Image (cartoon, rainbow, N blue to C red; front, top):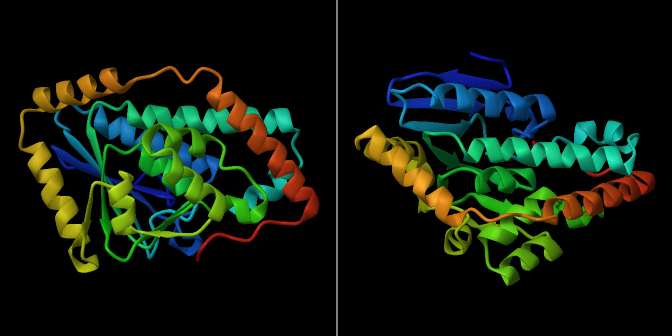
Length: 252
């Protein structure tokens, strides 16, 4: 166990890392994200590890960035906020770059930052009753780095629909868009994640690693100033939103 916020189970070819903040809907703060990325990198760098399963305790996969820290964010300058948002994105890029395959099991709600996290997981299985949303617009805030990642991965109209309405979509719709890989019944989620992890781990580690690296090389594209521009826009909108009112809390 690394921390109460993040739990780790090593297990040879398949390891598990669990977001463990169910009372906050597994909302993520800077400490939790750093622990998550460090934990996944640590177990993924084990030569015997082929798959890292990412789970979440409780009812929700990840309800977004923890709004409990928004008051502190509101006291920072727009430039400081933009720099922090870029740092968060770079941490997620480290998650995407680990040598082992990451497989996520998604239940309940995946919202805001939770979608950015999913965009940096290699394979994701969702329960049929899971929901996915970008609710930032309801708080007068731009999705920042999350939008950069989704714009790369999903069709433009789908990203704009999620971004501008803030309305949740079903797991099946998320699968159609490519946000998750598979959808199963809620009672079958754990078993399917374990089965899929076992299938991948059953292949030679060298083959899995090479296939993953080949995909990353093929799809790698320079972001240019996209991240910095999105972060600056989001930082400005956070400052405006905090000046007007405190955003609503995360799903509990």
